[in-house]
Length: 294
Image (tube, rainbow, N blue to C red; front, side, top):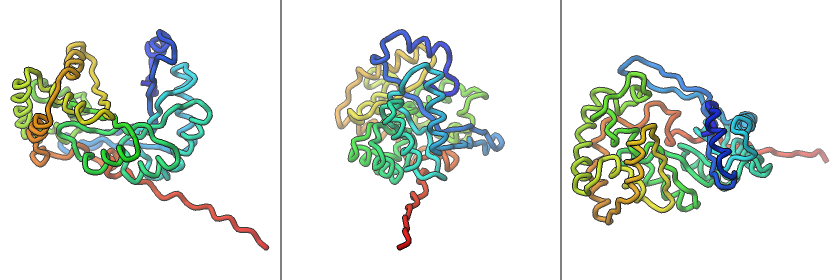
C-alpha cells in the first residue's frame, strides 16, 4: 500500500494501531503503464524512473498521503536501466539516514544490480515473481539473495491467479490486465490448462485445493521466503490461510515441482524487456576523477 492511489480508508487503518505495531511497505518507480498492440500481440509497456530526485519526491509524497513519519520497507518497484543503481540506492540511503525509510527493497532486479545496490546500502528484501510455473530465479537469484542475506518476497505465487482457477474454471475479464499476459492468450492458455490438471490431482491427494497446494509449495521454499498473494474475496482469503497448514516432505515437494514441467509451459511469464529481472542491468557508475594543477 502507499502508492499514488492511497485512500482515506488506508490512512484510517494505519491509525487503528500504534505505529510501531505496523510494518508498512510501499514502492515507487513505475511512472505509468501503457497497453500496446492488438488482441494477439498485446503487451504492457512500463515507463520507469529511478533518478535521485524522483526517489525523494515519491517518498515525500507517500509519507504525506499516508500521514506517517516513516516507511518501514521502501521498494524500487522496477529498475530504471538508464540510471546507475548506485544513484537510486544512494538517495534511498539518504532517506534511511534521515529516518524517513527504515529498510530498502528491490523488485525484479538482476544479479548485477542486486550486488551493486547491496554494496551501497544493505538490501532487506527482493520482490520477484516466483511460483510453480515461474521458476527462472532458482539458479541465480535465489542463491545470491541467500549469500547476501536478502529476504525473498514472491509476488504472484499463484501464477497470477492461474492456480487459483483463473482462466481455467473462471474466465478472464476483458478488462483484466491478464488479457495482455502471454500465458493467458487463447492458444497458450489452452495448452497451459493441461498442467492445471496435474496440480488438481495432487491437491486431491493431499486433501487440499490447487491454490492452497500452489501457495504451500512457495511457502516451503525457505524461511526467508514470504509470498504476497493478493485477493479481494473472503473465500480466496480462506484458501490462502489454509495453505499454511499444509506440510510436505522433500519427496512430496519434488513430486509437486515435477508435476509442472517448465518446458511444457506455453510462453514466457513476461512480454516486454523492461518488466523482467533478466533485463534489469543498469549503466556503470561514472568515476569522478579529481585533478589539481601543481
